[in-house]
Image (cartoon, rainbow, N blue to C red; front, side, top):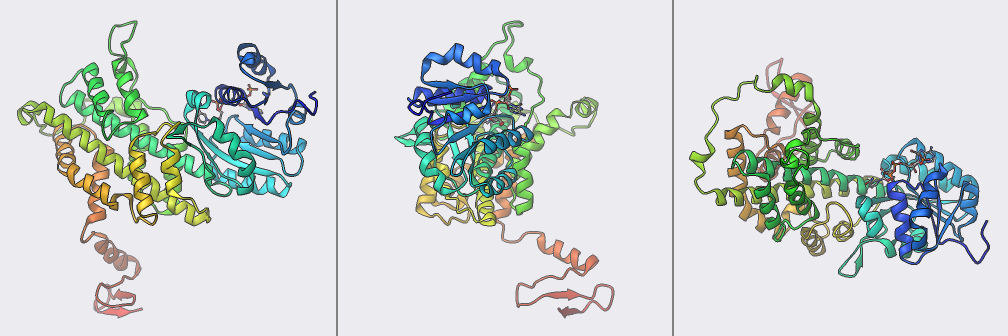
Length: 484
Ligand code: NBP
């Protein structure tokens, strides 16, 4: 047990990869940290290996853990999302008192967070669902943090979180996102954007490798070069590292010995499901999630490989004498597709915020995602500027700066999609993003025909371009039009 003089400012429950690193981060910043894990071995290991790094108060029971916290008590849960989180929340709530704050730093589904916030608030406690991005390294050295929950709790929690978050140009990568599930919703969409960003990088790699015939180490050089310009980002940087890696056992590029079936834990899928419910087309994220699923459909791919006809394929060398020009085209196609994916992600956040009345400010996200998190990128400064200029932007793509960029990127983007199609190389996000873009800018969409079909088979009615009202054609009668 602890004395009144020796209480912890913050506590961490769950000392696996994320929790132990987060606890060390708090300790490194001079905070006294209470730590607890269900199985005591992890607590012992943390104390043995890192106990000297700062002031930790380890506990072996949740009651001792709660008693070791100063008031209002602040405890961050870093356990497996789902039932484990519910179990820990209940244990903490039983031991805590009015005004104390429970923070869930795991990757919870935002609807769970909304439910938990209601339940915990009814018990007189504060509940904060906080998205934390940056993986193991971020948790230790500075993550991006997206806390939701009551604004009041941020008064007490904010300075602590700001001290451990990543900082960019002196600004901490954390801010209060909005009530109840806002933080976890925003973290979910962040992960969805991450899926799309990784996929467009993958598509660029695929083209340089299998269209231009470049070796992984050469492509690594291209990505390093790209990382000095508009595409400067953590994901482009680590792509070069992965492509440069040589497998010790075989001497081959590591990329060539990794099975090409991508895993997923669920946040990308959640982003798409939520977007479907909100009616927001996140085509880039959706295609990226499906691309992972297709890559993992190994028996179906095995059955189709070399079996399905390709049709007449073009010869890359014949059509592309200037390899450097093709590489630049691919860079531009990547940039344009990435822009679409971010624009769609921000659309989903805007819609989610409106639906739940969260008041999420897109400028905050562009600011806190610049550091600590997986999608950190220079380009987020531009997004921040876009929303600074016009917080009510209909689409990020309509910002004057990005509109100008797209003007420069368009021809390359179209050429790359055509080339990929002629070579039979899949580019689901490059191609679908271009179709989204062309749909957005289209004078007329075939939706008029769909309305006609719907009216034909189901009397679903339609509106006219030239007058107000709702109309129906008597398709199985004399085909005159009636006004409803
Ligand atoms: P895990 O997600 O692997 O969870 C392991 C922890 O959960 C251990 O401390 C374990 O305790 C505890 N736990 C479980 Br499982 N069931 C429990 C229960 N019923 N009661 C109490 N504790 C229980 O840990 P992680 O990878 O550190 O991630 C923690 C959270 O952070 C997750 O929600 C994850 O989605 C999220 N996150 C992870 C990353 C990442 O890069 N890994 C990034 C961002 C967010 P035990 O030791 O007794 O089994």
